[in-house]
Amino acid sequence: MTAIWAKHALLPEGWAENVRVELGVDGRIAKVETGSSSGGERVELLLPAMANVHSHAFQRAMAGLSEARGLQSRDTFWTWRQIMYRFLDHLTPEDVEAIAALVQMEMLEAGYATNVEFHYLHHQPGGARYDNVAEMSERIAAAAARTGIGLTLLPVHYQFGGVDRRPRGPGQRRFGTTPDEFGRLLEAVEGTLRHLPSDAGIGVAPHSLRAVSPEGLELCVNLRPERPLHMHLAEQIPEIEEVEVVYGRRPVEWLLDNHSPDRRWTLIHLTHMTVDETRRLAVTGAAAGLCPITESSLGDGIFNGTIWKEAGGRLGFGSDSNVRISLVEELRTLEYSQRLRDSARAVLAEPGRSTGRMLYEAGLDGGATAAGRESGAIAPGLWADLCAVSLFNPVLYARERDEILDSFIFAGDDSLVRDVWAAGRHVVRNGRHVDHEQIIAEYLGCIGRLQERM
Ligand code: ZN
Image 1 (cartoon, helix red, strand yellow):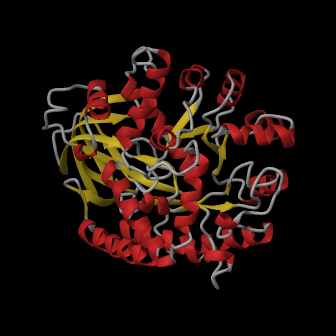
Image 2: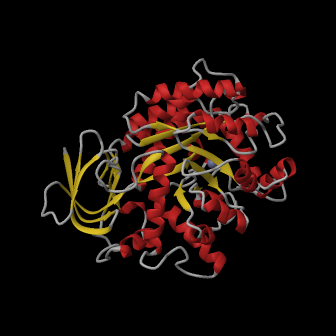
Image 3: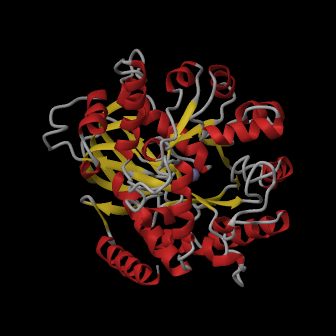
């Protein structure tokens, strides 16, 4: 039994002082006591730690390599995707493991406890199968065993190169799965996850309406009905136009007319929704999986945050391309996108709950369901996913209650994160992952070898 004593903590009922939290040997929170005099490892501020709901780990290694303009008249998501496809053709399973370990370590050091990995890089360059259908998935799981992060692994079903069912292009050969193969992959990944601590879990990810047919989506919906289902949706205008041509409806409209999304569903991006679509989807309980840094980087567009929130919509935050991994910056970027569009301030705040508090608590709630993880609050029975923040610094000193989160998110950065526990595993201490140096060294070795091959 480990105990943490926090001067301030964010509990389900709000802010509390002098809080003692007992962690069971099973990785769950055993007991929460307020007004406790002491006892346990002392921290200044204790927060529930959030799940990062959307990541493609391997893309971390191409961060910064797509910022020069090509010969085309306009650089877009689609030209970026070509660069990404060329890059991923050089990656070996060993590379993917080293990159994933770095990504997971950076997530933990930023204050996330869980990596929900949307994993579509299944095969060898050219598309030949590895002997083990789950070779690449096992590398993500091996990285999680190494870093101690909570892992929800989402094997991706990827059938086609476009909504009209054209074959996958040369850059997409490493992704493709037939329905049978996808079923086998899920089973193999479940076997792999049994070797991780019991907070690890699986989910199902039909890639997008571009890459799966209606039958493929139906298959995914039925495969593991009790586990989370994630899909990219309405990210780019050309994608919306393509769906409209083939299905006669916009993507969100089509989904609402053909499926019953609920809390099991996390829809990634949703940057292009009409007001009506925003309201209709928000009330279903499905979470919007927002990735504001990547959406800014790729020029995706601005999410309808104000309308979504007014309609009671749920959200989670992910780092997607991992061009930069920073929890506070994701939250801040979402709010700033709304301010720039609406010429207004504190757009996502509500009476009695500041902007920072609203963003953080929304991310906890959406993160927990998106990860299919009993977490998201400091409460007995939940996984001990916790983040301790230092208050003795120029940004947070003498701040109180919601002001602490507002200052952390809008004026601070990840260096304020002191300690992180993922299902009770104390993996970040004093601002550093316990295996920081070694993980960096292995990542640098991987990048050096990769550069020689490219
Ligand atoms: Zn994505």
